[in-house]
Amino acid sequence: MLDEELHQRINALAAEEHQLISAHRDGHGLTDEERIRLRRLEVSLDRAWDLLRQRAARRSAGLDPDGAVERDGATVENYLS
Image 1 (cartoon, rainbow, N blue to C red):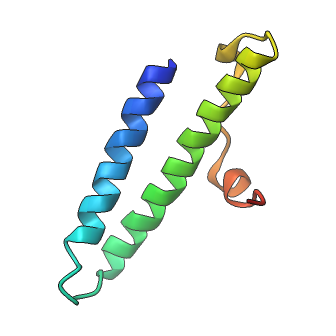
Image 2 (image 1 turned 180 degrees about the horizontal axis):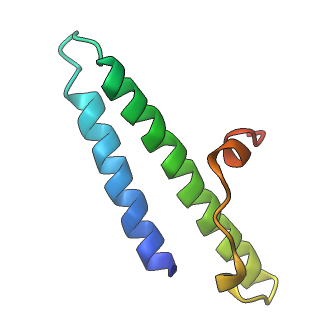
């Protein structure tokens, strides 16, 4: 996956996340289904950002960025900030 494709994916996921959150700013909470979708969006965003960072790190090290591998949600969610 190319960096530009990753940026497009990140933008689409973030737009959906913002739309979901904005729809409930009127004081009504998210439904259970919406909370699950929001959590999945958050994990998908973290995975995409992680892959983009891996590609940049590989490029900086003189390696092929296409060697970066998307990690599973459990892995990226347990990184220390």
